[in-house]
Length: 187
Ligand code: APR
Image 1 (cartoon, protein in one colour):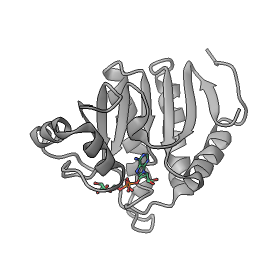
Image 2 (tube, helix red, strand yellow):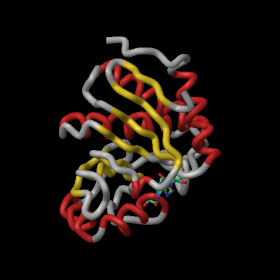
Image 3 (spheres, protein in one colour):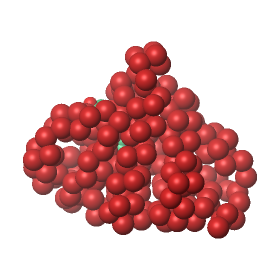
Image 4 (tube, protein in one colour):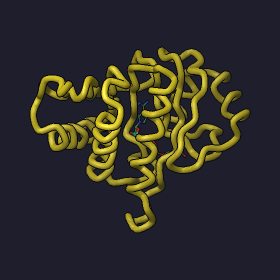
């Protein structure tokens, strides 16, 4: 299978395209700590989702790096948006990997707590924040796998929505490394 695994009751797959047109329950945004929008996927989510998302972000105030908050999805094809703040890449000696790992963990836990069973996630921190995509994909996929080990069957599907082929290939490699073969559900 090109990019699909079943693990502990959760389907983990990859999709190349624009996350703002991807139908899901929870759409994860690569935000910044101010929660006031920006470029990249943040800009697209606010633009397509409309002003109701920013209104809720302003009420929340801030989100620390490695953390996640949840708002309405406005006009997006999702029930909610989960805004997470990934680390800015500073060479890898400032705890970037731990913070990136936490961004995925917090986003997945928030989705599960809110019973948002299909989560779509972009490649956090690998755009404007400059995190090398090969390393980021391995950190993200390990975080996804460890979430599924901790919370089997908590989510029905986790889809990485990747904007370009280089990013898609990096995540495909991470998927095959973390889940060496297409396997039936362990449960
Ligand atoms: N759909 C899916 N992925 C997208 C989209 C989109 N519409 N637009 C961009 N991407 C991809 C980028 O190509 C990259 O692979 O999302 C990944 C993350 O890139 P950024 O959006 O730049 O996010 P990040 O690197 O985490 O930087 C966050 O950028 O937009 C600002 O306010 C944001 O300050 C924050 C910073």
